[in-house]
Length: 420
Image 1: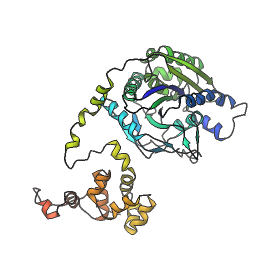
Image 2: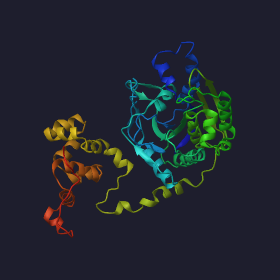
Image 3: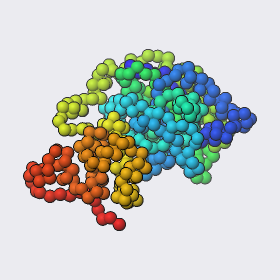
Image 4: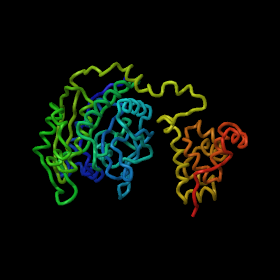
């Protein structure tokens, strides 16, 4: 069964990455940044977590036109994002799709509505502090896997501080009910006091920062009724993202001890870290077997429905590359390239030989079995002039006339529109 080894709170300013990538470890101005992270790096080496649950917000990089309150990264790997000047020269980090699927089921059963993502890169909110906390290199990758939890804290309205806390409590339940024997660390990122926009930019409040860190350790529930405006008045508008520290704290036991704390304010945003160790063994809110059963309750029996393949997180991860390619056919340029040279287009998309064979043979039911969702089949059908009824008939192993006889009207249709 999974165990929680502790939590880390950290700022995620791009200053950290700038200093690391610029080789400023011994520069007197920047050196305090690295000194503050040395105990955190040592803590990760000592605890050796298998997975790091990483709570952060994207800065309108990968999430721009779709901005969720809570998004769970369920993919197999996550690369550094290009934020305008090219991605950082660090390796992608592995995800843990099985663990992510379990966490998702429990969180949804606990009435938290999530979105799920794959194929999105992580910006400085993730990789800036991560790159000075967790060991990594090009040859062996990172020392642990990552479960990103992306929080929408930039677009109003956003969830309350209490909602973030409750998410953390539920996250604890999800982690502790995971049946595999893994060690899990939790990081809450963002803050502390800062504002980066408007005439109010440059605002800091070190007194509030230290008070917040103290209350986070000893009396976190005293923070839960603070409004977003309360947090912003004390910590600047962007400083209200400390709700993500509350989520991390909610995932720990009631009693914790801070074994490391540092605070450094070089410019626009403090660079602060905290290590929080559990000092109590809180009883689960319910037996873990009950949690698992409740997480699967709505789907019990679905496996017995003949010819039915729910699009689970596991299937979406397995079929991601092929689904992504088929979705790309909504781009007119990709459509033209595919019509001109199917093989070259599929090769350029990095499809495996098995995936290319499914497409070239128009093996509709084979693609469903592989992990493709039906609505991607529609897109291939539209590009190749194959109607939905043809696809339905093929999936059932029938001719089109045979299938149409099972319908009230013998028609055909597709999702294609007017091509330019």
